[in-house]
Length: 106
Image (cartoon, rainbow, N blue to C red; front, top):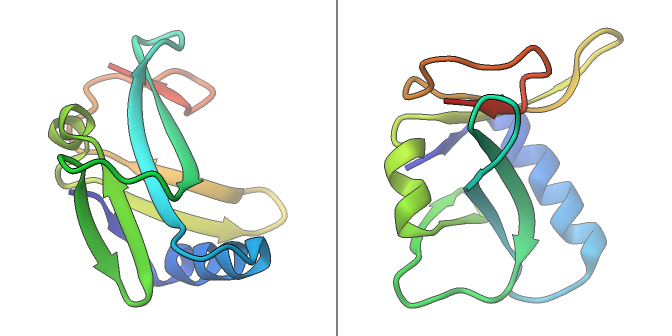
């Protein structure tokens, strides 16, 4: 399952609060596509399936579908807010190759 750094959990919490919708979870998924074969999909979701894998990081609920969970096992979601490097990023030990944009992997 994917872990969140403290920075990522704080930012996700702020974004969920701004949405003002009850029951939102952070969904992290792996989809076919991108220049290296797979890409990450990160969004807020309130439609949680029975077979979704759900964990919590503080007050943040994170859900992953079973097929994505295999590819995200041991991965970490981070958030940086700097001049040269800002936004969310995933460090995934299961990724053998990644593209130059950092959004696609194999």
